[in-house]
Length: 433
Image (cartoon, rainbow, N blue to C red; front, side, top):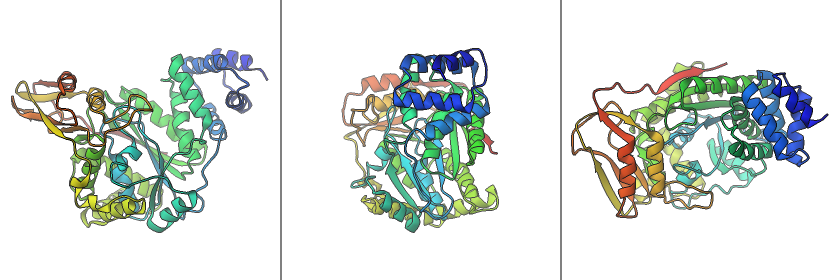
């Protein structure tokens, strides 16, 4: 078998066999297939697309390229959640303890963030003492005992994805739906999940800018799940503006605590209940989405979810008192309001630009080597569709530097005030098997 024949076959629009796909992945990981040939094939895939069967085989080959996680020692159906990303993505901080509080095992493997704000680990590490350095045995013990634990993702999972993503990033094929779908699903499958719930974001702050592409990606990933025997569902959500009000690490932890108390922003609460209901249903803890939603709402109202958060934080070395005293979280030196320049209605709040403004404050990383300022970030006071009066604060900047004119300038560019506009719809579609 020759790599040039595989490239030519896909270039001409033909379906690759399972043997050809595995030959490519095996050879590329081992280094016997050079970057220039791998790049040629990814570009051929970009233009010629792949069938469902090809994408499923590509995902299987990527899963088999490295270690896989054995979660068989954990009792019950393990349901994983993945988001394609956004700004103010506080979801996991609320979702994990909430779902665990109704008896669904949450064995979460996650990473640090690169971009707007820190990843889930960075956000949790803004709580004094919290750590994710757990042995596999301790990880499984905690999930079996208390239904929840979070651990850092192993560097040996899906090495094919690491190599392919770096290549796609410099060769113009990042936006290929088959390659995005296999990248996401290979990592979720290798991490040992029995069922997977996906949040696919669309809009200015999302990777998929338009809904049509987001739907196609979601449908592709759900079909991959079917092909490889994982129950999979996807929710298409709006990311034209930040989710919730907080953008930043400690700020998002505080917002998560508010939501676990039954308060918090309406959009964040609705998203958590939507995703959580699908997780509870997939785990067999409810007979219907409606029953699952009732279980989760009860857990928020009766304090069960917040109690699970305290337990989770304490189990991993963190200070559980932050649940009742969020002022113990890192605090920025300065709080600077951004006043509205005119009256009207908020008609746009570009999520990606607000995310970049938070990164300028230190809330995120531009490179892997950068450190994160846990206290830095932005708290919104208005969302799209809300009325605004001139001089009224649109948001508050949390910063350790007094001069934030560069941040203010970027924020003003990202926010538009005009005539009345309806609030955007948060949940666009739910796609199941």
